[in-house]
Amino acid sequence: MTVAADRLDLRLSVEDKDRLRRAAQLQGLPVATFVRVAALREADTTLARSAKSRRGGLAARLRGRATAGMSTDEIMQLTRGE
Image 1 (cartoon, rainbow, N blue to C red):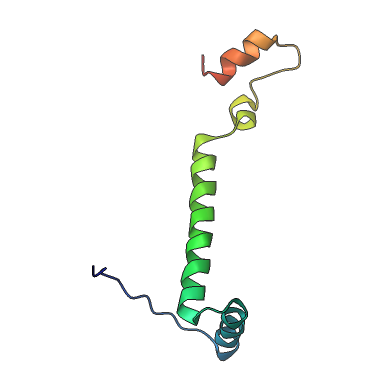
Image 2: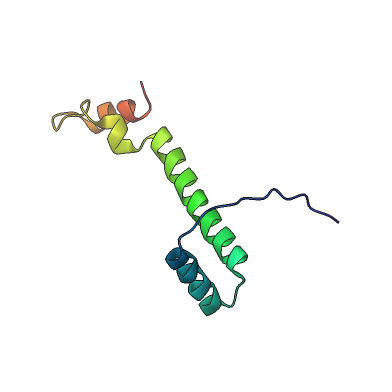
C-alpha cells in the first residue's frame, strides 16, 4: 500500500542541524524520523492543552462566582452551569 506524503522543508542553522543530527544518532534514528516524532509529540501536547483550556477547568468556571459562604449544593449548581 502506498501512502501519500506531503513534504515539509525548513531552514536550520548549521548548529541547529548538528544538534538534531547528534540527538537522532543517540536514539538510533534518521534525522527526518527524529524531527517528525518530536514535532508530532509537541503538536499533540499543544492540541491537548488547547482543548483543555477551551473546556475550562473547574476553577475557571467558579472564578469570581463561588464564595466561601456558599453551600456545597450552590457550588455544585455553578459547576453544572445552573
